Length: 310
Image (tube, rainbow, N blue to C red; front, top):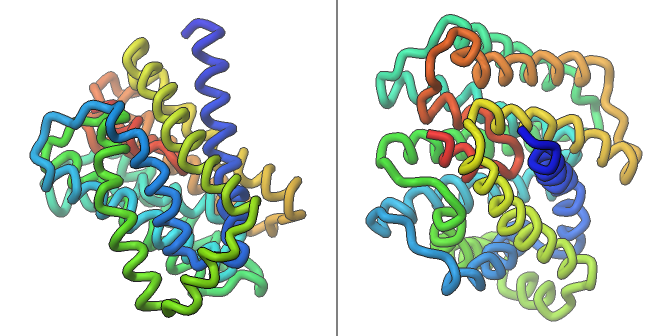
């Protein structure tokens, strides 16, 4: 891969890795589901300029319900409940091992032994992270973050099962299913008074966070990523997403002083190694990766890239 493209891939990883701290900052004073609605309302501004995916709209919306509404609704909620952003960037990668398991159950796809080893290693790593999270991290926040990873993994399997093509178009058009349901859920769970007060007092930090997540992380990030996937084999591009958790953890350390415990570091290493086996195992064995395997390489904000790697 040319140096320019390598640097472009690294830039996207930095944007996606920093995304977790940016989200946490924007949540100050804003209910999480309302914040999700704001983010994807901005993403939808690109709708007139992006071609609709060549698939029935209901399939696109089904993917969006899991990939965007479910994943980010739960992730934002986990952060609002006290999940540290650095730890969230790590735990969310459990989607890779969950995808392999769901694909085997739902689609009957048989993973390689090396991938099964990766699933086991990732599960052990996630367990170690849970044990070492420290008393300052609420258990409910960790569980909700794992559910966000599960929602992402479910979306991965839907993409594979329904044959929805990947690309920036899927990211934008699938966002149609997000703003109104997210706003409705926020009104139901948080109450009209809280939502109205939050909308009336949106801070500059919230708007900047919305712009970062919607424009940089979603539109610019995926635009660059999909261009790289068009130019190079997915097996050369997708492994870059393994950099997202370390960048997220370092960003949280620098921005918030979030220092992971020794057990979290150990569990994180095991989890990332497991994701690496799931992602790169077929390449080492000389077998082309299936769509679900490619999806396992996706990082905190790289679902579209993974879908395009089929």
